[in-house]
Length: 209
Image (cartoon, rainbow, N blue to C red):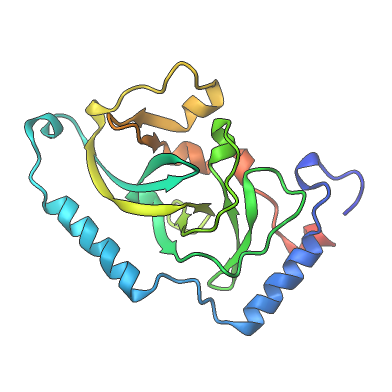
């Protein structure tokens, strides 16, 4: 990489990363899709959530259908309309030494490179070193992967019951948060997450030249 490239890419061997991704593509036909057992469990959880009778408290205000997941000792939730699929623990993750803290590495999704990112650094926490499932998120197409320690369940939550982000959160953190549930789950703002430049990287082949 040329010395004048921006800080975001400095020190990363993008060419080596793409070579490793190419080897993965040749060795497997994208084995990172959701296995039938996990898919059935998630669909069953979603069906139970949708069939659950609402109490008086949750009947007030618009309902959000949320995918609840845990990462780095914090619980998060994201509207299911942004979650396209859930991948198993990635054995085919290509790490990028020297990458910015949120960028965990690259993987292949249906033959295309996908950046896998961590949420913890966006909230002032250290990114965990553990592996786990990945939520493929985007607005109608895969845009990035969110690494999680565990994917818990689908929740139905009234927007009116959410608490505001705590004062300790900075402006960037508050922009990513729709609210906090009463049991401490950070409900993420999907549109803001997909517009956060800290989570997106130029993965084109031209950049590796």
